[in-house]
Image (cartoon, rainbow, N blue to C red; front, side, top):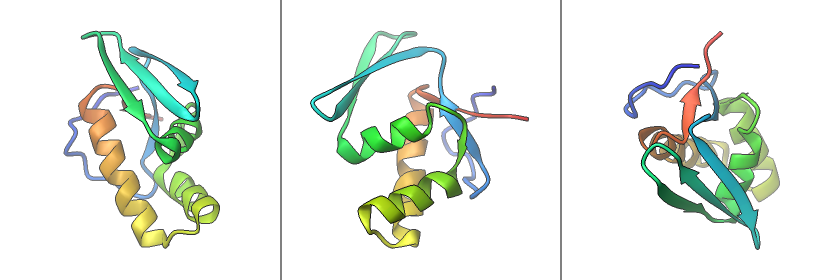
Length: 101
């Protein structure tokens, strides 16, 4: 695994996975994440929680966006744009990593 800069160029085949430097739990449909390096807590809403569940195993952005598009009846372009925005924030906070071969 390799943590890259948050301004990473997101490609559909970019594979992401949750960081080993975090712990998370889901309560009442929302996810609470503790970034263990700095002790900061983060929260995800219902859609963010679904995305978090999809990246608990390495998944490509295209795979995740396709699931979001299907499950939430959202346009594919919008799904990918929202996903890459969220992925950038999660990467910047050290909550996900770019999975390498």
